[in-house]
Image (cartoon, rainbow over all chains, first blue to last red; front, side, top):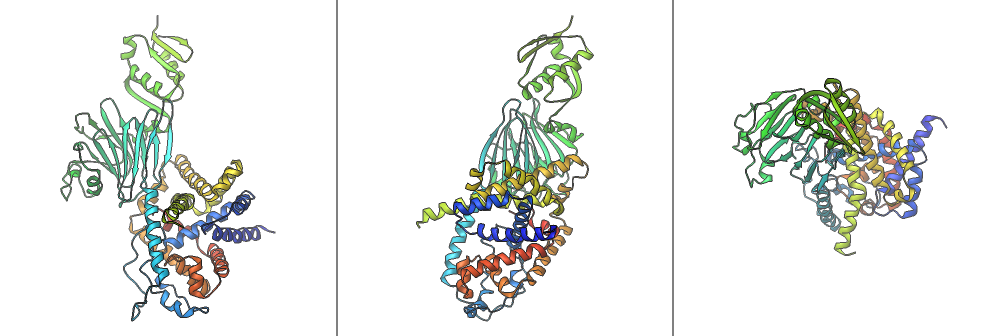
Length: 379
Length: 178
């Protein structure tokens, strides 16, 4: 068999498997056969994925009303009516954008009576839809320990890179996607979906994004938001018991909205700060947004890739950062060294390179004891 | 079957099949059609490494979760390789641009074109399944066919559509909708 024949054969088998899979019950024996078939060849895997794409396309196809079918078979008399029963369309497939307003189908003179099958189905479909939404309205907490970094793919296609010693709660429902960043920091790559705003809450500050990439950090000065791509709105001071739902329905950042200008609609987003790519803002603990800074966003968020960037930071804070990323713990023995400022870019998992760097710029003594390293001004 | 049992089965069904599939369909939107074979290769290797007994429990869930993860990682790697191109992000943002609307319209037209290549009976079956959400038994009753023939026709339809639909056009329509 040549390549094309093999592919054709695999495609045919994939289509057969798909139709078997897409029925509710598949006995163990059948499932085992399916798994063995998949593990026979990567071509089989590829073909089943392609059939899945075809299925996805059919589920999102909106022109069924225009698709002509003919009366066929013994029950043909009823087929004519079938094309006009549109009331339950779109329900079984994934919730998606409303059907097109232009309907090219010819309307029947009289509306066909819906059969019991149709009614039964409508009920089942409603149940299915509820289940489906249930799948999406998930809520769970992610917590990372010392030296633990995680990358989480969310059900909407967004990706969160979670730094060590970070806790965040993810709450998704059909209206909004909300993250509570309780401590630590995370970098977000948000899948665009204007109908379901993406909100990050941190210490009363709310960051709202539509489709973009940005980082939110708890730092000593306050909450720091840095934008890599796109635009986000930062609402510095979330009122105490402000309902999330209202925030979700507020005005999204738009290109025509100048920074800090009131947003039409009078929502609380009026007082938000709009950040574009390459900009950063710090919201202090008192809820005051400092001026927007232009920064090298990739560098500012390099921690998400495991790189640590320091700029005129004290040795004490550098050590604290390294300790968060590693089991190996560094201790600074004297205040003079702790207060010394330094700049540099390091691999987060390589505290030794930081110590070597320190030794190259100043005289430092190093004492090792198992996983602990104590540094002090040298003699 | 009681309502509770039915609901439980339906939940199971969504967990095992619909949710991972939906995630795969969303993720694959960032992978160019030509690279799907690379994704498949990686998924294949992961399937080989996995315990067979576990896979057999929920084959669809494992397959599509792996495929979604691989597609996602693929996109991240591509972005790291070409940090300045950020094509996937353009793709994301494009979802609201007029060009993207045109692309979606093209994808819709492409599906319609491919459907026209099927037999009228195959079209009727697909229409009942996707537009009206009828089950196979119901479709069989309506068309006066045996469920076996309906199944056979569905298999043939998928196979035909697989070879006639342009996968690059489909990416547009599959991406970003839940």
